[in-house]
Amino acid sequence: MNFLLAAAALPTPSPSASADPANTFYSPGTIGFIMTFFVVIGAMLIIFDMTRRVRRVRYRAEIQERLAAEAADGGAQADQ
Image (cartoon, rainbow, N blue to C red; front, side):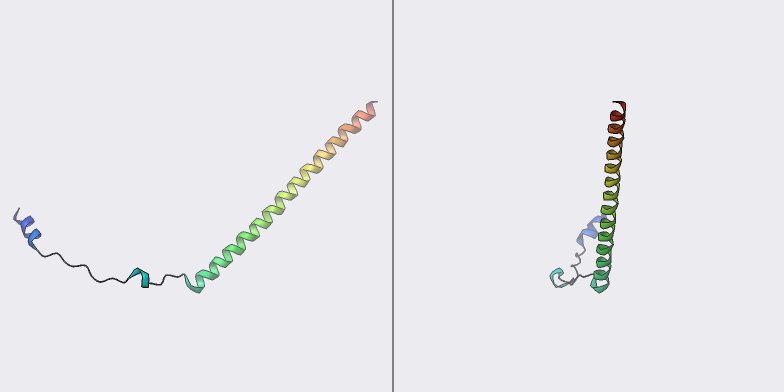
């Protein structure tokens, strides 16, 4: 109990002076800008490549549907 009273009686330390956040400059710098630029370029290349691949798959599916329809029409005309 005496320890608690002694601890409470001690003067509390005042906080140390710290830098004002408004005056602090936070920036990734030139290296951060260059790395972000390369990430954006890479993402754009991946998006363009993916668009091209999806388009190619869609066109192949359309051609297969046309061929299947022509084969079905050809078979129906041959029976007549």
